[in-house]
Image (tube, rainbow, N blue to C red; front, top):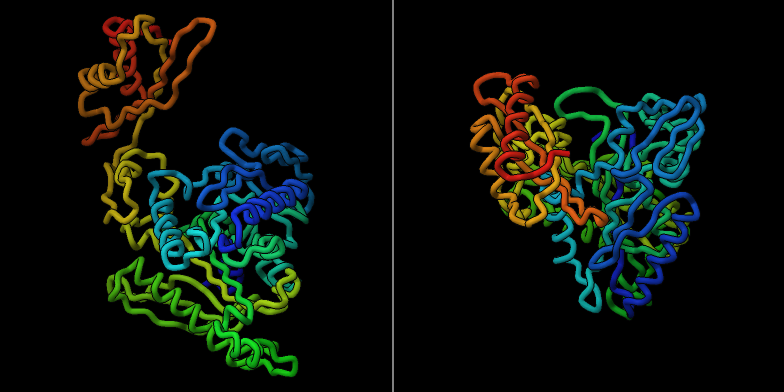
Length: 468
């Protein structure tokens, strides 16, 4: 585990007496984030989903002196080191795409917590946040997590800065304290994170983290009124040891550690199978003590899965939760997905190549899938847009058959990517994306264009469409 940065700690409690209390808390949370240039709410159902200022319709636009992301403009200064290429990844949200390996893994982990931690009123105990704004302050990314001022993780060589005060989050833990301040006790956070790192098959400047936080009161810890009255969870005169923090009692830490290890052992079994070998390795993080990393034996080798620990009490005090103690964990989705699905190169997660994406076109996230290398030859992609005939006789199936008859095996995929209804003309328009790829040789764009032109002519003649 890279000790330079928090492991992406670790989304909230639906077990409040009434659902309206939850809704009120979410509204307050959204209002807070909007006031601070943060979030807007997308929807609210079994989880809390928030939508940031970054989306596919409002790409980041760097200018000479300013950087605009969504509706917010940031002034460049001596700290600015963000590149246009990295900014292109904002808003892609791979973990939210329906048929994507990262989305499958995210859903499996969500389901584990929803199943094993039920709350009151049939609602999940944990709340999910999966679309928080990736632009954060240095206070959120470092200070709130007790990262020292001189820590190497703050360096420009490690993070992507918009300016001295703002950066693209280096871990999902950047949202931890603000969520706790809003009264969240049990939550999962998922999102894209950004780090300046080496270039190889397992490293990319953007990857995805998922973290979990669970906070407990004295009554939650002991679960017995008499014990909760007699046994404290805090020791005002305690000493810091390898087993505990100076403010915690051994009894409380023992129970809290057992809760953490039970949860994460079962999570590893959920992902890798009941018989998976698991080992706990002592570690160091600025925001937890004691801390561990978990490794599982997979395909004959030990694989580091996540980092975790008992949350530093100072962090909780600063967040206004000084009457609680808690644990937190964080894991990288790509690291696990590469092993589970046999994906050899991290760059493939960002691929728009249909040969990759179609292998995950299943509805059940638990479907066993082993990635198979697609053709070594590149794709050529052309779009075709046309007005449909007014008599309503056009069908997509007719168009697919026409494409097959002309393009043959050189057509890898045809998909309807856009529909448009012109009110004044009272006409419909379709846009189809056609992916060409020869399986035995490299197909040039010029060759693909010739096939595409034949398809346009045939569609106009045989299907009576009007090319736009």
